[in-house]
Length: 259
Image (cartoon, rainbow, N blue to C red; front, side, top):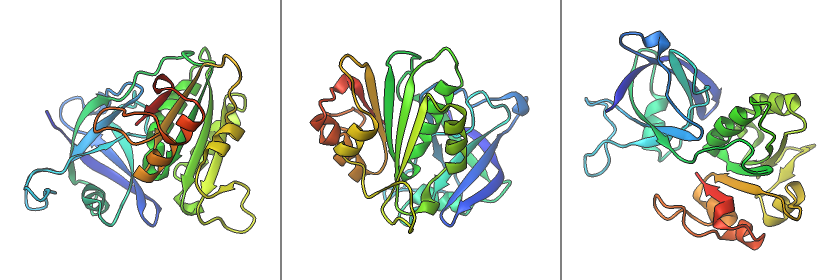
């Protein structure tokens, strides 16, 4: 069933992205949580009515989003949404104001994260594909008995497109032994200290070297071109075969997860 939530606040992040605080409604609303596990997402749609977002066949458009607020947060949840010119739901979100209604359903479990299942993990993300990385890595680092180390390789077009940058930098500063972050930009400003261009097999080897016997995991979430280059595309809802840079580096299907 679809759960109605109300837009409580909209915080603009840059010219095409905002954080939407969605408040639960009904009895005991201030005690309700998203019920998400790590890693899982919600699906979102518009309510029925004159502004309902429909596809060409007249069916409601449904999109998955991963909240950036902690799963146990009570009373509301936060979605960070980038508005794309051809994105039906993201454009609709950009028109929302406090008091407007959104319909949610979930959680939809993507993969079950197990502490200490691997020695270290790399997460290759692009654009708004950063939200599952935030959910998973933030959760793992909050548990001192989890010794898994993480490397985040995060690609964007320009510097202002780097989502949650302040939060990521603070997390890396707090956990220097467990989190390394490398930002990649297509259009880098002068004096840029990060990498430029796309993430490649060479970059993965450089920042995430595999030792003999290392238990590793590679996660990928980004636009279609990035999946193709890094891990190979998904096969509908299935994971599909490993291809691209990770295949070239010898990663197996057990060692790769595509969000």
